[in-house]
Length: 195
Image (cartoon, rainbow, N blue to C red; front, side, top):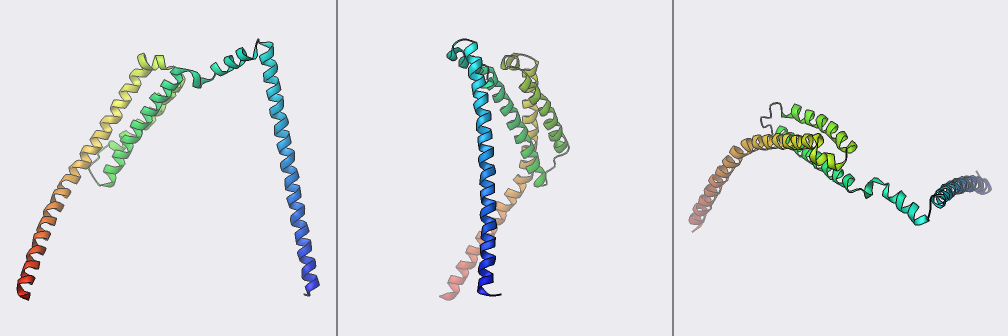
């Protein structure tokens, strides 16, 4: 292969790369323009709706107030859902930690799985209900009962973990005290023998 052939091959490869890049840029420009036209049409339709329904400020206020995030009860329901999943996760983590430490857990893993399934149902209830019914109605009672159940599972797992950790910690402390006193005694004897 001569230098001219190599240069020709390089020029051909460069032409292909430039052609592919230009094609990609053209497609990207076409997709961007299409998306911009679609958004412009949507905005124009919304403005026409606002104009026909009264003043623009009233239309914007009506549209903003219909969003769920502007409703206080929506925020309260989200807070309750967050509390629920935080309690379920804490119970599951405690059971997993006790199981990993080989503490006696009995049926706690199965109960934690049932807790998660039940929490999914209560979460759906919280999503569908307003906060006023959450605070006073059956949904609130379900939530409180599930939170208490999650706390009971977590407490049982922590108690089991403490039962395993306490003897190990006490025996470790005794072993360390014995070893430290033996080492100090050996160092004293060695210092006396050097004299």
